[in-house]
Image (cartoon, rainbow, N blue to C red; front, side):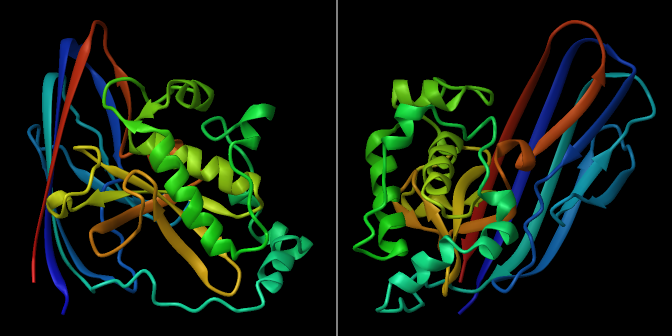
Length: 283
C-alpha cells in the first residue's frame, strides 16, 4: 500500500545591512520516479517575489527566486505532498557467477558510460594511504562488498553535528572520525569509486520517525551501480539500504551538485540562515 507524505521546508535569511540584489536556487523538490508519484508543490516567500521553475544539469527541477526590492529579511516556505510505493531494497537477485559483474567493472565501455561517477572530486578525493581504508574482497559479490563498506563507514565515523562544515576536506573527516550524513556519503562515494564502482551522491529527506539518524534539514546517502542489478541506494549514516523512508530529491557527483540552496547576494555585513524541515507520513 502506498504511503502519503507531506514535507514542509522553511528557510529564514536575516541580514545586518540592506540587500539590494539577490538570486536563489532551491533544489528541494521530491523527484517523480517509479516510486514517488503525483508531487504537489506549494512555494512562497515573504517578499512575494515571483518563483520560476528550471531544470538543472542532471534533469532535476529547481525553484528560482529573484526579489525586485531591497530587504533585510526574507522567509521561504515549501510544502510537498506525494505518494510513495513501499520499497523492498532487497528485491533483486545476485548472479551466482560473480566474476561476470567484476569483469563488467573493468570493461572499457562500462568505464566510459559511467565516467562521471567514477572520478574523484574535491569532496571525494583520498590521499594515497587513505585509499587502503577499504578494499573489495573479490571472493564475494560486489553487492556484499558494498554492504560491508556501508557497515565499515557506519562504524568508522561517529555521527556528530557541528564538527564539520560543507567545505571540510574528506581527509580531515577521516582523521577526526566524526561528521554528519554528507560526510558519511562522501566517504562512501570515495571508497566505492576507488574500487571501480560508479557511485553518486543523493540528496533528499528522511522520515526519522522510524528511529533513523540524519540531518534535521536534508539527508544524504549514496547510490552505487552494480552490473546486472542497477543503481542501489546505501545509507552509511544508518547502515541500511535506502528504503521507503528515503525521499529522493536529486543526485550528483557530490554535495556541490546537490546543495539544497545556492544564492548570490549583494550586501554588506553578516547574515544568518535558519532551516527547518518536517516529514510526516501515513498509510
